[in-house]
Length: 247
Image (cartoon, one colour):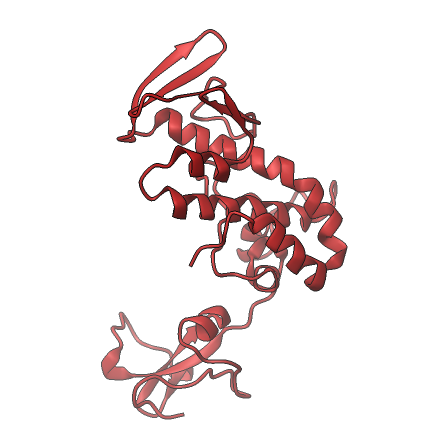
């Protein structure tokens, strides 16, 4: 499931309903998010072995990529290890592109349409994540977090090299705010009864996670709702049943 290239607008409209206080921050973060994702994309184009890139040439002020169809794509020198968002635009046959999704769309390469949709979502979701980060300085103490999950909550930008660092296709704004670790939620897992015969278990399964002839498997609420098609949970946190396991 992919969002359309208008993901920025769609997320902005959803945000107006779900968390209006973040709208101004989201709008401010969009240019930086575009540059951050474009930088990751440019790094990949500059260094990955892609079949539709016929050649690469370093020039005095940047890098030129020669595409297999004869077009030329040029941009700044690419540092394979830099993590700062230093690419604000690249040029395809002289036309400037500051949005990675529009660039990939016009490159018209195999699987480009789906990739462009994910890039658009990555930009919009990254802007949302940055808009909701805690104010600094002093928000995070210098000492190590008390719990392991606090480490993940501190990672706002996602993978520093992957263009789809914040792509979450299929997630609404409400779901990103409810489940994205950088938004600092507390997510309660449900319990799903599954017959023992349908489980492959290594080691001893905890007795408190057994029910009759089945095992109780922890399930993320998003997966329960969208993958297993179960909504809500009982007082014991169970989301429903799979196979013949009883409650």
